[in-house]
Image (cartoon, rainbow, N blue to C red):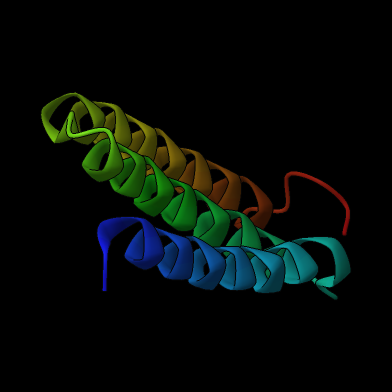
Length: 91
């Protein structure tokens, strides 16, 4: 497989996974299902950033950006889960 073809297949696979997480984010019956969808969406965005860095041959720069994004996504998910677990908002 040539690199553009491989990138296309990887992008389509990630798009399919993002759609699954968007469905969970929009239609989740509970707040925790929606938090799970948001966390998965953040993970797939991190993968898209790394894939973009590989395509543009600037992986060193995109690794730093994706690590920062993944850390912010993780901390945000933990903060929101803790907030809702303690009954911070009415469900």
